[in-house]
Length: 242
Ligand SMILES: Nc1ccn([C@@H]2O[C@H](COP(=O)(O)OP(=O)(O)OP(=O)(O)O)[C@@H](O)[C@H]2O)c(=O)n1
Ligand SMILES: C[C@](O)(CO)[C@H](O)COP(=O)(O)O
Image (cartoon, rainbow, N blue to C red; front, side, top):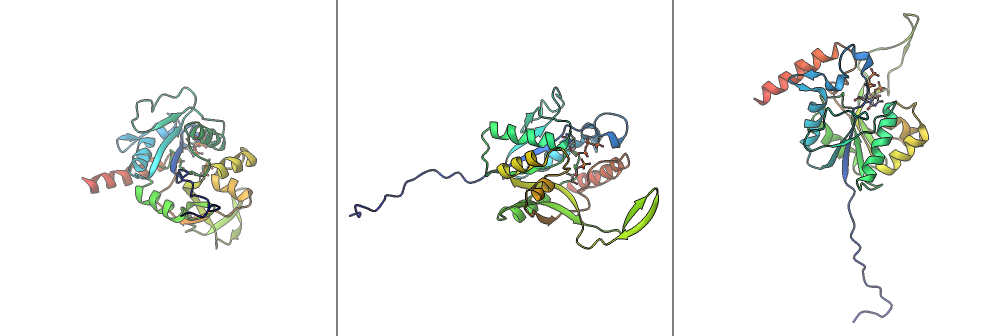
């Protein structure tokens, strides 16, 4: 017989945190030269962002793939398996903050993990995404893919090298970057539009994101010459799979 003061276990359903991807896709690609915004330019037979989406579609643990586009942008309107949010803002940080709100409106919880990934980083692979998840899931803060610097670093002024900067401990930030929705939303709101990635906002909030080794192939299409390199690498992957 149960002791009269012994409380019965209450079976409140516990929903484990889920994983969502948010893909900011609302930039203008001004450094990539003339033409359509870089995320919609064709590379290896597909628009840049469609390669990005294919990598996330191959990671079954990602419950939602949300793409943040500029208001009125219908480029991905027929794309299966994604949620479109017309939350594009004047900066990447504003687009991401809008996306986090859109995820909340679709039922995402404050403790759910969000993987933010640039649409323009179309060489990401399912293996890299899974490596980041494995590296961050048990972490109290979360983290990002990053690559240690491979070249000597110069401080430049007016086209001349002023000094050589020690590169020990310096990493190039990549994406995805994985943080809990509530923490990331409050950090971004606090940090404002000046931050160029999620980890910066989290750092400003007093945390130290985990650095998970990425890959040199996971570069962001930024400059005109990046497209030829992406084309070559993606074609090689396609041939290897065939
Ligand atoms: N207001 C913005 C700016 C950028 N991005 C997205 O953030 C990613 C990385 O940004 P970046 O390379 O800086 O893209 P752009 O801002 O488009 O490029 P640029 O700075 O050369 O104009 C891209 O997928 C881009 O579409 C966004 O969603 N909203
Ligand atoms: C988020 C990012 O890709 C990390 O390297 C990068 O900061 C975004 O690009 P931007 O040119 O700084 O907007």
